[in-house]
Amino acid sequence: LAIAASLLCGYLGMEQGLNPSAPVRGRAFERRNMRLPFTLEHALERMEHCAELEELLGGKFLRGYVAVKRVENENFKRVISSWEREFLLLSV
Image (cartoon, rainbow, N blue to C red):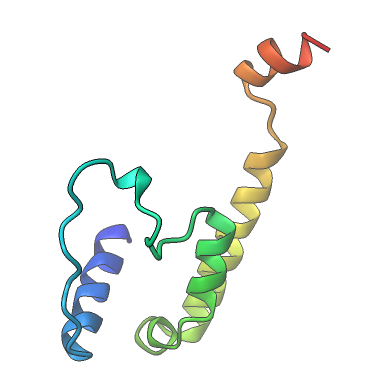
């Protein structure tokens, strides 16, 4: 699905006549003008409201995919990792 989404974004860029941004040189983490979402929640929100994706993937698929990923993320956040158990929970 990730490869399909990447190809779809390339297709949309060609259809809209967009030029790719300049390659990142140095540490990409330090760039302040990036437009990528920083959290999965933000990425899913942007995906959910993307008219182009809805048109090309279909609204039903897009809504279903976003719903599944939100549930997966909520389940992930409920799990206490071994690191959290060792370094946070036991040091209270």
